[in-house]
Image (tube, rainbow over all chains, first blue to last red; front, side, top):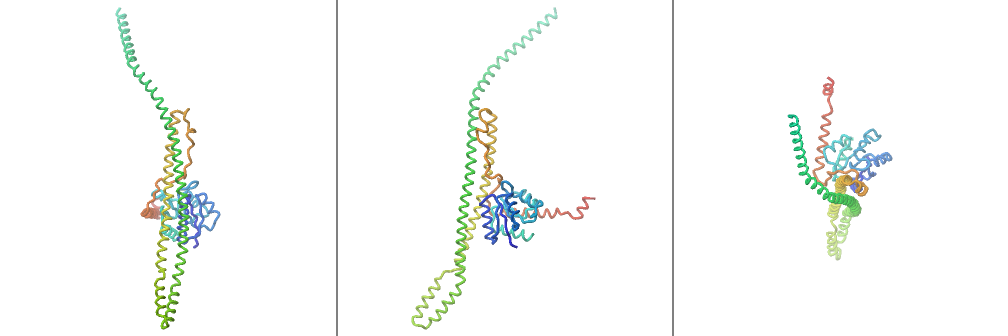
Length: 125
Length: 257
């Protein structure tokens, strides 16, 4: 399966790091978005995007709001979504899982963790 | 007669009460006087406090601006480092590819050396040439070792990239500090307005600054290691809970019985 990632983070540093990690794992196809709203626009404009990696804390529209928007009846409701965030409190993780995020990675992460989670999501989907 | 005496007695009693009131008033006059003096002394003091709070509120604005500048500066610096690291990784990749290519040609070169040595055996000056060829062959680069060293450098470079996640994490911590400072700023503004509404207005101190990030994680921390393990155990626990929450038909029947 050819994967095309939508990398959503308001931090240019984090987008670069996620994209570099994806490249080092052999995933070269991606688009970037600066917040949840931008991500919805990019997702709507590009039907080939089939995997989302999103931050939680973002202005305009947060990652959690993005997950809820996608899962809540959009035509891309089943797309895999990996949350990559600094939020490591149990309540936050449970909230994200209840919003039907596919998996959850806490920053700082390594490419190996990213790889494990991507593979786990794909194995379950 | 008796009534008149009673009335006179009451009048004296009232006069005594009146006398006591005057005595009491006489005793509290100095207290009232000291309160007035205290208030007179407090007025300039309050004014000084008011002015000081007003100035502090202005300085807080400058402080939040500086924190925002720090965030912008570190983001710019991190981007520059990432650019350089990307260049190093690309260069390393080119060198690794060249080394790999050279290493792949090694058997062919070894075979050529071997054939030349065979040809030279028994010829005049052959032994000397063979010895020189063998020296050259032995001194050739250890391509495999070089490739492994380059891989180690490449791994370390990738680790630098990952360590730069600290910029995002610290920027969230700074945004959290900024938010706290802004809260203090707003409280001070309110206090200034209450102390002297006519003299120190909120507008005089400056508008509330826009936060660097409208959302942030105040608990963000740069901790390597076991954090993801904890997260995974919470996720698994949640999944187990959910599977437990999948009610059996018996459970559903019990609910309806």
